[in-house]
Amino acid sequence: MPETLYALFYDYPPDILERRAPHREAHLSRIRAWHEDGRIVMDGATGDPPSGALIVFRTGSPAEAEAFAADDPYVAAGLVLAHRVVPWSLVAP
Image (cartoon, rainbow, N blue to C red; front, side, top):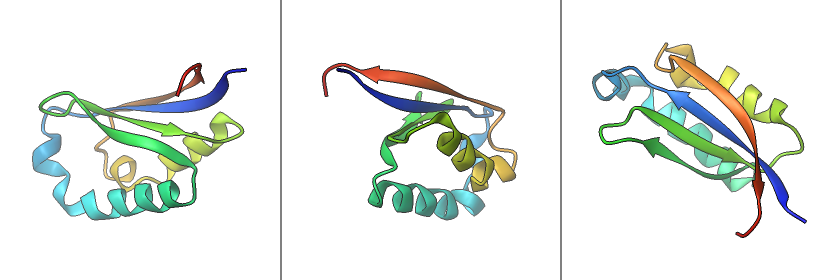
């Protein structure tokens, strides 16, 4: 039976590299904490240069991924232009 995870996608502005420095450590610290307690499975920027990010959650519902986004320092600073949470049915790890 497939495991259902939730993928949080972020869309970044073109100048993310210039604007993220003051917020980066708080953002990464939050990701590390959620990863250490098992709620985040994997994460990282997408694109080169980054145009967004993907954060994969192991939770019971998409609400936890939405809660992460709501309190993310990048979101609060306006570094996330849009986000979406979608279920991901993991068939083979």
